[in-house]
Length: 67
Image 1 (tube, helix red, strand yellow):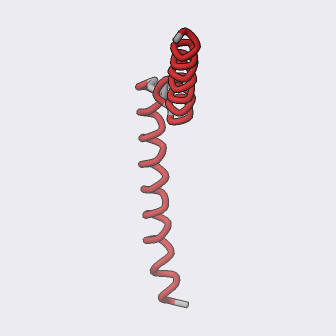
Image 2 (tube, rainbow, N blue to C red):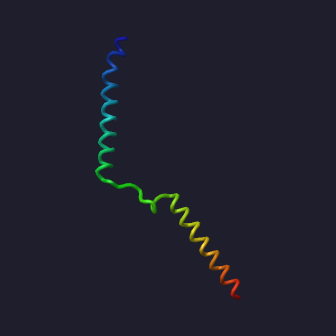
Image 3 (tube, rainbow, N blue to C red):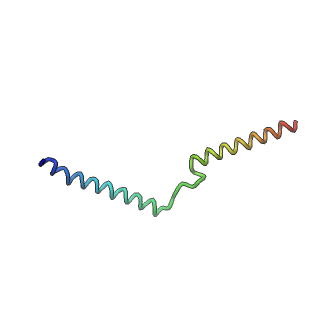
């Protein structure tokens, strides 16, 4: 029991330090105000790629029908 009583304050201090570090990081992110813009997200890149290939296919079809 004596060993646990010695370890508890150390563990508590470490948890508090981790919580403070997380809080500081969150505050820095909020102050920075940077969030991923829609064009930067992976899903939007995927959609943009699909849209571009669709336009290419339509253009090829138009060219083929003219010939």
